Length: 156
Image (tube, rainbow, N blue to C red; front, side, top):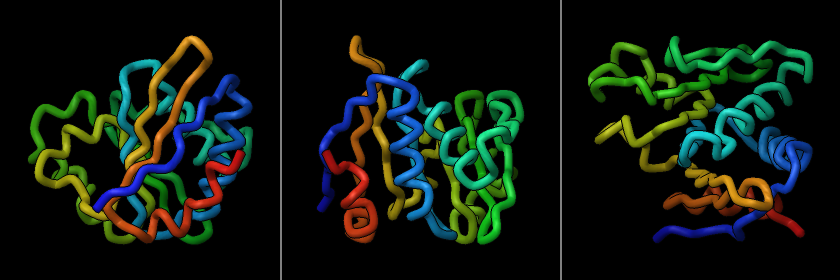
């Protein structure tokens, strides 16, 4: 059974950053965040805000569009920021070492539909979209642990 949090509208980049600062400290090794949405939905901005929470606001966080994966070392785990848009086959996931990272690292994955059958079952999906008011985010998962950990992220 899946659960859905409230959908939150972020009218400014600062509100998106604030969301990231509530979400980031709840992450732990083995967490996979699937970022779903069209180009311009805010997936990369949210990923960068989460990474900068751990590394500092001035940290350089390049796009993984061409490299497919960028990794960042934190005190407790590595963060894998993945942009799978250019992935030509789900078989490339094994070559990248991504399936092993699912077990021990925190993975932020843009364009997760490219994972095919390798989509982690316990992942948290954040569906994002651009609207006239800014951006929206909705949290979805089949794992009740996410609901418990993230219940306060969408407080009004």
